[in-house]
Image (cartoon, rainbow, N blue to C red; front, side):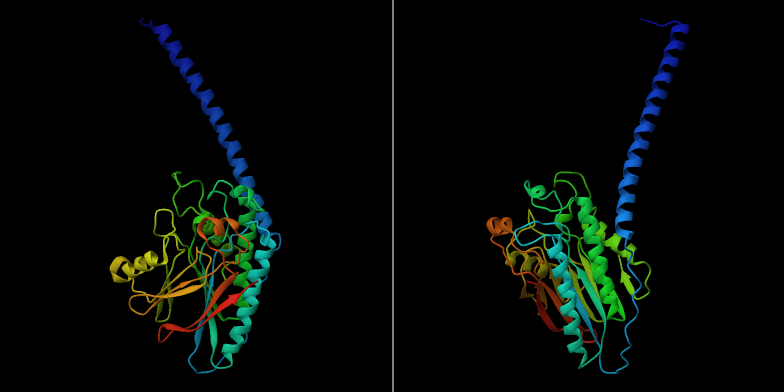
Length: 335
């Protein structure tokens, strides 16, 4: 049926009215959503800056000429907010600070022989427990994503702040893990949009622009560690395999393939977490693959599903930056 001019004009006017009504409704919906998002961000900011970190004084300078070494902390798999019979956020906080206590004491022992002025901190991923990794996970945490973000970000900042208290300078290299994934594996969310990475950035901003701290973002899933002539890769440990779980032999072969040209940056060693165990394996050219444990304990899911259960531990190394290799390594027990 054809419309006359009057009917066509009325139809156009009706369409304009309906469109304007829809646009107003959309604007109100967007404003409401924006208000909710801003409320979440404001709550996070308020929670994190309620007790802002205080400036840390630079430690007394060590003027000795003897060859200095650099401390390396590999801190990984905190699983912040995991709840087991022997683990929760409070236990996480205690064990992480126990590591720093022990690292400081061991560093002072090293300093009786030579200077240790700097530290490189490797944050290896799975710092949060997340909520999207297996069906029963929401029932095995003691905090929501929001609370995990706040508590883990604050703890990351506390660790770096304490490191600044007994080192002239601190370098942070951070990598994200599978537990920080947002949504299921089928969701179209970029892998680097990860809660671990968000915690790292929040902690970095909390600490401000201290000239003694170097901390870069981590958009990729393999990080480069450079300490003088020492070169290593920091990875979480889930980079290969269909579900991120492969045999040690398979992962060692993967690292050797990276050494043989699969990664465009020469490196000596590699550091991973993910499997919650503390081991060392030799790579093809004499370098080492260092696996580091977790602060977590009592994980029946890991014990029953993949047969993994470790004593809580993290890793402390000392690096000769001129010769480019590890001179001393410590398994730091936290139980």
